[in-house]
Length: 335
View: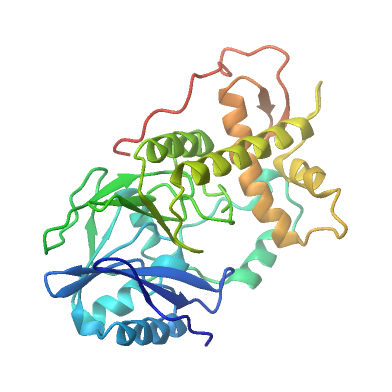
């Protein structure tokens, strides 16, 4: 394993880069927060490789698994949450997650299949071969709603901020020092896909509202789920917002005018057409799942419409009664 050394990024907050063998990027940031002589972790990693890496990181700060009293998961994706059951079984700690990501902790739900996006036969099988099961185990969960005070001792406070978009139940955590643990909500140099359904009718709109909300917190330090901590929270938020706004414009430009339309799968293919090499089936599938979320957002703003099954999308010359533009996504609240 390529181990990075742990580092104390703020008094009482340690950054533990944990190896995730099956993931790109190959490490996830776990944070250990001092809590009255014990530790609260933010995220944990995925698999046995992550477990060995986590134990090594804890030893590097003079601690061990027995010092863990609780874990807060920023979201239920396996690179951040897959090791939660393993940690809980060995320590008896509590594990907290937002209710909207609770479904991640158990057998993978039956997916509706890529055919709904216009994909050709065989794509679902290709995805299953590449990724296999992403079940992350079933720890005993403590549900943390928006604005919850996380149990932490030693004179500091830690409050949840619900930031749906990358996942329906994504949480950021605002520390009393002004640091913001952002999971995969905002990352330096990485732009995670907004390709997960379930954040209401408009995951992309929810994400833009989440960005607006966390930018307004004026965090003193961003502690991301991947990459290095960064002090310029406003610049990072603005860069992320511009990226996704440009992504939306590219998707809109690929949607045809007039009758007929295109499926989300076809739109994803148009976006990839200028690449030197054609995308693999799995790469186009991941792109198409994000494209369809952007198309739902553009439909809500009155710029595209859809018809048929699988849906075929076209530019809206004038909004229909069901395609009324909206001023913006609703502010995050309880799901």
